[in-house]
Image: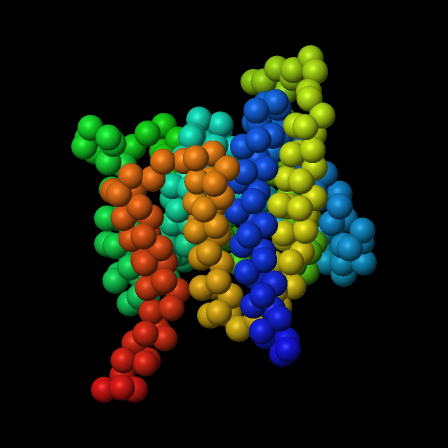
Length: 295
C-alpha cells in the first residue's frame, strides 16, 4: 500500500474519531459541567502531547510561543461556544454540519483581514451553503428561525474560521505538535477559568461519566490530532480536504443510531446542501478541470 493511500485511510479514521467525539462529549456533560469538562479535557490532552514537544520548545523563539498561545485564545472561544451549544442541543448531526461551515467562512475572514480575495469556487458554493442553513433553521411549524443551539454552533463556526486564518500564519513557523499542544493548553485554561466563576461541580460523578471523559480526552482529542497530523503530512492536500468533510456525515449517522435523532426531510436536504457546498468549495477546481478536459 502506498504512503498516500495509507494517509487517506488514516484521515478517514480521523473523521470517525472526530465524529465519535461529539457523542463522547454529549455523554460526558450529562454528569460534568460543560466548561469544566472542556477545561480538564484540553489541559489533559495537552499534557499527553507535551512529551512529544519538549525538543521543539528549544527550537522555537519565545515570542512565537506567546503569539501561538494568543491564537489559542480564539480556539478556546470557539470550543466554549461549541460545548455550550452541545449542552442545549438534541440534534448533534445538524450541529456538526453547521460547524463544518467554518471552512466556508475562512475565505470571508481572510478577505476582510488579509485582503485575500476568495476563489471562484467560494462564490459558487456560498449560496448553496446559505440555502442549506436556512433549511436547517426551518422548524416544524415552517417558521424560519435559528434555535439557541444552532446560533451558538454558528458563532463557534465563525470564531473557528477566524482562528484558522491566524493559525495558518504560525503553522509554518512552529512544529505542528507543539502548536497543537500550546493551543489545547490555552483552551483548557480558559474553559477552567470560566468554569470556576459560572459552574458548580457535582458532589459525585458516576464512573461511567469518567469513562466517557477518558474516551473524549485520549481518543477524540489526543489520538485524533496525532492521526490528523500524520495523515495530512503524507496525503495529497486536495484529498485530505475532501476526506475531512466526512466528519459531519459520520456524526449524523452516530447521532441517529445512538440518540435516535429525528431528521425530517427539510433537515436532510439542508445537510445535503451544506455537504454539496463543501464539496464544491474544496473540490470544485477538480470538477472544472475534468469538465474542460472533456470539452
